[in-house]
Length: 130
Picture (spheres, rainbow, N blue to C red):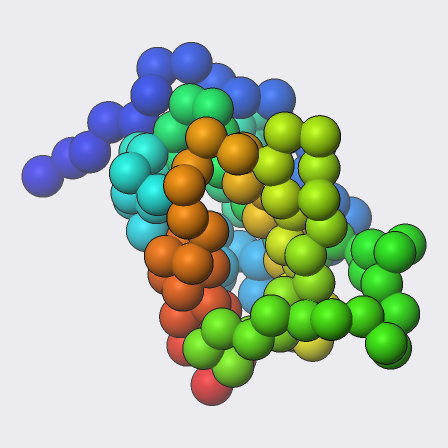
């Protein structure tokens, strides 16, 4: 059985660590559907960049720690993964701050809940970290 993604490719700049073993494994194990959107191609094609739906939920693995993050920052813990939230103009970006490689996921405001999205991604990240 094959699942086809959206036909249009989305430009996503890969993070510096996107080719690491962890990011490659993460890219190979993410769900085909997330937040009701299907996985779609990213350009350039990198194991550490993924996107779902339109408007796109975008995942980048191997990112740097966010500039706004500090030891006093409020975190959201989901399935043993600590996420640092940052408000964007049209959504929220969450960065996992204590995983093997930092993972960033940007979720547009059109998605009513971020909980299911973070739960699914946190489960995959936790399973890779053992």
